[in-house]
Image (cartoon, rainbow, N blue to C red):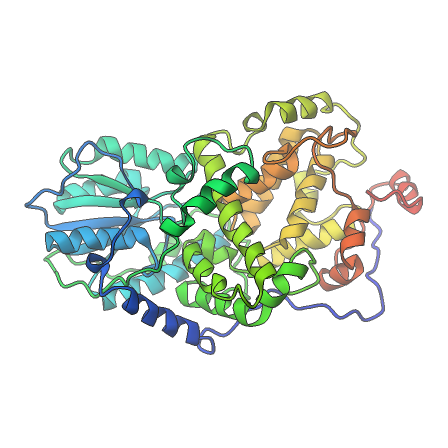
Length: 520
């Protein structure tokens, strides 16, 4: 049985869904960046490349003199320009005067990703393939995991070195380990961190406790790493190996994913769409970011996270563009730097040095103890994963946030914290709460299946990168958030009016609980 609480009847002005600028109308920044690269250097050969961005994972360190090409296995960073891994691969190919090959290895599925995320990925790759073709670089669509298919590609085509992306998730790290064992012994395996500004292994050599411990380490190294990018140029060397024409229909048919969660309308996949979103941010929303970013009713966010997750836009490029406006919007720029550099790189640090990054076992001892101490506390509400998925709780704000996630593939950052903490409060155990939060985020969010997503859930449910707070039921010493606290920060009724979250009750007892004003 359910009863619906209607949104306020008065008209409340709220901002629309995330800004979705026209790619064609937002071309000024894209053109300017092209000129910036050309002014930085003629090519990667004329640029002082920082070798600390690279880890050689193999015993082999020299490219064989008789090789027929260099290959870059693109996985996390799905773009041509502003990509240190792509640039390093071209550097090797230019120095050895051989062709350059880019490979993408399409899995049938990736964690709990749905057709929504894969359509975003594949449409972005269409742009990569087109740009590679214009630059005389062969783009190969391969089927299967990189760990399985790249060794054969390398050996068959006499590839002299394999460059790979860095991603600190267990399954992706396992692919790198697999390649170390399976590649020909004389072929160097080079991993480049093109996702972070300061490479993860350079930012810190250990698991950091929190933002306050990694922040000074990163800021100290930013002058060395926060540089302009040279261009990936038209490659001067060709060979007999030509890529097969990509059959994009076959790519989609290859997938074994849930097709009920379809693509969103507001986000245009690919580099051009990401740069258009970045341009609309600096032109329209950056001025409000410093003061309004924690208000879900305001359009003050960058909205760039989907493109950052898929590597279709470089975080370093975003910082360079935003940082140039610091004299105009100092508070906003500093806030953006904190989120786009410190918090993102802290997330990679956590996953890189802690293989239990998605488990209660991966949190601090104090948090494990307090969650265990309160594991048997009576929950004020208990919901199944299906009820959470369908936005059928007693909390109209939580339901509206879940509707936003399902509808738009993105949830406002402030509400993500509230959303995950309530899942802890409304599920049978911390383990179940964490699993449900990760599942829903990975399933619906364009930027799920990502270190930042795992760390967001772990912070909310398990207190990582946080401290102990006043002890209370269910949460123990984990930081608490509630409805009334949100009410003091922003106009809840406006957000609920926008997404239509309703109040669902399960019993007369629950109705009585609500009418007494004891909403959590």
